[in-house]
Figure 1 (cartoon, rainbow, N blue to C red):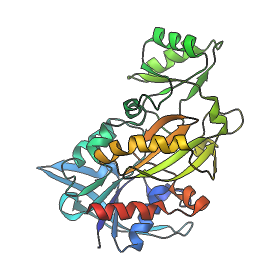
Figure 2 (tube, helix red, strand yellow):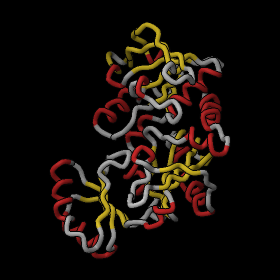
Figure 3 (spheres, rainbow, N blue to C red):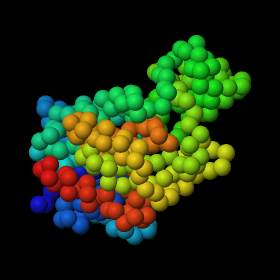
Figure 4 (tube, helix red, strand yellow):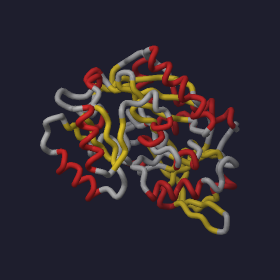
Length: 313
């Protein structure tokens, strides 16, 4: 099977080839004989029922400083000329991202979009979590100051973060005696038009924030991300350290609980975050971590995902 694969992603010139999951997925596609194209989401268009993009043929190499080359740019009909689209531009989940899902929905599943664009639109990471109340930590989604104050009175030590943020940006820990809560609420209300999210602080984060990758609803690999001393964020680009790990019985239970929903919604490639016994995020927009999993235990999630994609076709 030889496929035409379009990568909708951020500028490939800027990626870290030793950590970027999109790069690993593209390399595996090339090894299988699939032809790659790259386009920026800003070059995506809809007109008269056709979905097009200005794209360039892409060749990938695992060579630092020489990891890609482009062919000539051309306008391609993604509904007629592409077999698979990997929707891999990074969050945040904003109106530009939502618009792209509406456009791609016109050609999916004739052209297989990974992940299903309608499901991506309806499953922002921190809201999708609320489908699984028995798996998540105590959580409040609000813009109301009084509700936040009451939540802190109940749980004492809390985390406040943007509802549609990513990468650990804007994440604050507020303890029971912290006098900055009102100022923080005012800042969130000024800078964000939507509600924000408040959760009970989980001290288990000091031992790590587990990233587990699921392919077609099945757990296929995991890494533990340990925050720096004095830090509550475990994201690797803010200093979190990836470690080899094994899944606990509770983590297996979480994956088994959410797996059927992921399959039903066409969410083929998902990364979840687990702290202690709690599911804290379900990442469906641009999951990462597959290169770290391969380095630690040899599991090649890129191969597993492409096997799943080819089965879908």
